[in-house]
Image 1 (cartoon, rainbow, N blue to C red):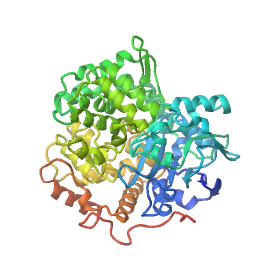
Image 2: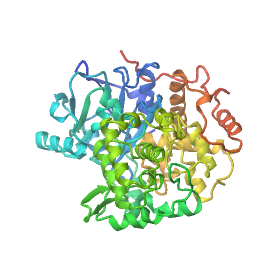
Image 3: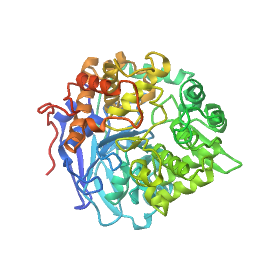
Image 4: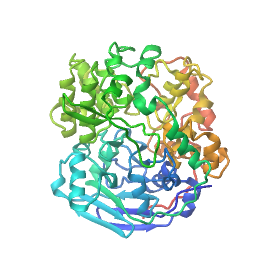
Length: 555
């Protein structure tokens, strides 16, 4: 089976040490990306670790396809113990970092310990350098990029960084690369902040050699270049009005299911502000959204659909320029737009201020710096909802994505059982229900499909293949690319989901954590079907002896 190549680079920022550890056997079993990082985290992060403690470890990992020139491969994975969910979380980001990471000659970076001084870590194929960067305290993400360009000749595509939100341990702080691409969900920016790591850069000319089968490599690339999908013009916002009219666009902190100003924040509104094409590394699909409004003097990338929901309909804001401004704030401060937007919406509800976009931006900035009410909101909805007097619209402490489980019942089931909580990318049941391939009504009988979707997503994040490449990187092509039977690939995904669950079980997670803040028909029975389909115990735990330990343990 095709897999990533290169050692684990284990960095301890407290001790200022770096060690390259050969992990060939582990790579053969896990392929790379999320599966690789999850296996390492399972063995090397103590089950009782504090997410903000030095014993937590953050993993940045790549897959074999990042050594190709195929479209839909400009992405990387990040994994750590989440300060938002208190369980293991993986997230991935696009941009241009992956090729520079591979050039350093490694397959995965581990960041452990905690530094007494604010640090930048510079990783090359020749070694690791630790740089104290006190001048970058409270710097925004673009300011970090400017510093690295001026002092090290490294562009934003070489860097990942945190903003003020990460330094201030905002529980939904993101890690940013290329200034506007986010390792968004789960608060992993706060993990780096707890370690006093402001930035990590990558450069080198020693990528491992991996032979990528062609075809289908260039077939995928050609088709991506020639396609005329609306996604290439409007990104994920292209479906905003369709979802609003036919399903649900959660509005005014989940009080309503339809937003009367959806057209003002939807795909056409975004396309009108788009001024050039945008892409990730090596990708001809070019679905990114560089946007600007000259009258307001705002230039950003996006917003994508999730941001349109979180800072638009959920807050009662119907002007795309207002959403663009909030999007830019989150990128600069380093915050997940979903969790930040939902949390701000909860505050607006508590103050009866829906539609007040200026207040929303003011509160967003206060969150990043933990000023005033921002200190409370920086904890996220789950930890602040009682003080606000609003309902807790989270699962496992993670704020919901836009796709409404109250209408898409399979997606609701997915949220309920996902190891990562209220995240839409964990299984993707939503796409089947939007398309009509799966009836949106009901939860029973959907467990097997959900398991398949979770396994597929876990392998996709291990390869690593962009979620938007599914129409081009078909199941057959996926098997050809990785020189394996499709069932073997899905087994890698299944083991990854099970490892995540087992890790979380050791932290006390079980059936009581698998649920929703609203009622769905037969949800409890559907969750039991899911456990049975996974071969797990009735209490939502992984059976004893089910987990292999192929990863090297920490010293």
